[in-house]
Image 1: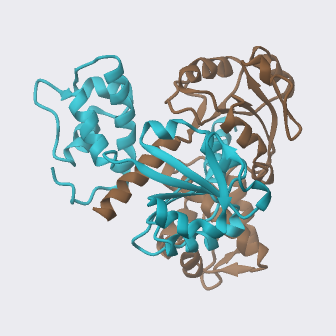
Image 2: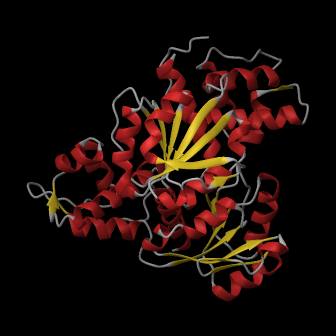
Image 3: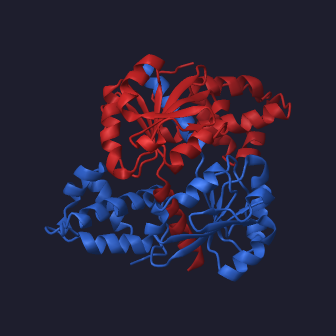
Length: 211
Length: 211
């Protein structure tokens, strides 16, 4: 498999979907599937599916289709699911607390080790068994606990300053829920979840079908 | 302006970003801006920006650039922000409650009128002033209150059944946070926020820079 080739972001963003559907097939004890059958359940065309999976060396066999279990594990490997990830959440407001409560993340190997906030009233509060800690100690915590990913749930105004601090602490991947584009060095990954942008896409589409 | 032409989803997904940056410019009392200056702050190329905005008839003038206020309001109009939207949240778990608490939605004209759940223990609880109600009464509520958009925060297993019920109640737009692709008739809009897919994109990118 050629893991070094340049894959387009469009393909990459489809991989988690393949992964999810393959998991469902595995749960239903289905052993193999053709690109045509996969197309029927995922909604991409069969040719799109073959093309996508060929980017990673191709897993299918002519006349047999794909081995579901193999494909599931290979895509998991490509997605980086061969290790567990230690994460912290910055910002223990509603969204931060909701994410700390979201147990689905653990199923894909994500463990939230702590929440951090600047509000002393929140220090020591526990969400499940995850403690809210003082933002002043974040750098030490990241080093000590070998944190891989930070989940940014601050407000807009604090986000860039917090991101700078995280980068300075050695964080290489930020999952950003703050409604702002943060600036980071080139070797740091940012994945944005911008809820307002998603909502405005919905209103655009709503308007276009209801006018 | 030709609002009926077919605009690609890639362009549409950039519009909320233009809208957000133009709002910042307005707040800083900046009256006009060239595509080059806009490019410097948004990060898209100037030619991309001109091309995007031309899709909607073009707002700029050669040698003058864009009128910030006009462009902000026009993009708002395109995004459907000329009306207020009445929404309900289905699923009053952690995520549903966090979204009910997220006041940023109100700034773009979204009012959450109620949460709905099937768990009687939650009925009557209030998140800010938003009450959790019995899912059995959702259809009546949608009709009575003229609800435009439903925000789906149930678990995976309940999502399709709830979506069917919403469609049956006349809902034309669903903002889906459940980790599943729901099936709806063609005249119903679904915008997905799939947190696990976003997270797996992050781990893919993390792996690709850290290997």
